[in-house]
Amino acid sequence: MLKPKRGNIFALMLILFTIITPFVMAYFLGKASDAGKAEIAVVTLQDVFMILLPVLLYCMIFRTRLTDIIPHERLTLKNAGYVALLTLLISPAISLVSSVTALFYSADINADILGEMNKMPAPLAMFALAVMPAVFEELAFRGVILSNMKSRSIMKAAGASALMFGLFHLDFYQMGYAVVAGFFFALLVMQTNSIFSSMLSHLLINGVQVLNVKLMMSTMTSIEREQLITAVPTTKENLMAVLVSFMFFVLTFPILLFVTRSFMRYNRTRRIDYVFSLGNGRASEFELELDSIVKQKKIVDVYFVLYVVITLLMSSGLAVFNHMQ
Image (cartoon, rainbow, N blue to C red; front, top):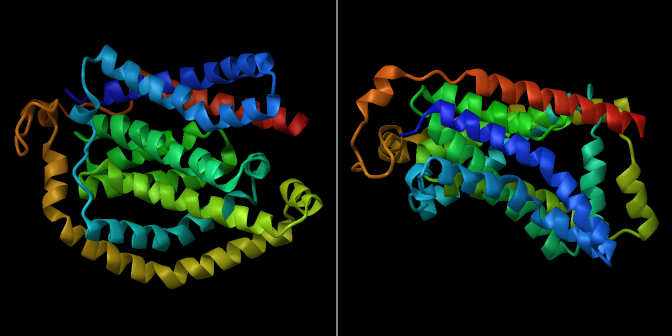
């Protein structure tokens, strides 16, 4: 049976593996004969250790299968088109939140990401920084966590899973836009009854960013690439980014509403399937487990609170550490 408590327990597993993984990776880096190649391998495979292993552990503990808990209806060609268009239209909102957040928190993580991109060939960068997160982060947050919360209202389930997704990044700059993106991804899954919709959207967002950066770097000298990586935007540049993002948001928001309405009409039946598929996979497609509806398990419990506290503490610690460097 799907329960918010199980989703919250799984979230704590994720944080535990997030804490352990860097130490395990550091050990293997120390043993490697070629540190450069080993570092690239670590970046490429980190989601396997940080996310996939907790997902498999969840399935073992609760004796379930991924196909029993994760909505995996085939994504129609029309829905794929809707997802791509909606992703394009939601991007200004994500950029707006990102640029506003940059006014208050340093975007140090961008330098780290640019540094990793600089070391990788384009295909590997696309795989490590776009494909892997799109698959494994969606399995965890729009799969295990969101599915366990869907006995609650759509907004509460999407909001709670989005908050967890934002906090998981352990970076105050990333948290804001990750929450917005996570909420959007959750609604895609709820509307299409398919994890493939959020995977596609996630892939498009990350993939376009990777492609843009790699194309830009390909026209630069090594010195110019280093300057790009270490550059710190001024307050004036950040304010200009906010203004530009806001203008694009205002222009695209009415179109976003129109396309969203059409998208929801097209997926009315799939949305009902998603809401009513609350069982453990053995129930029929439209069977409703009344016990899950009547009890209305709370999303916020001790495990949820622990997750929030631990992620905030880790984010604060990492922020202080980065500031001291």
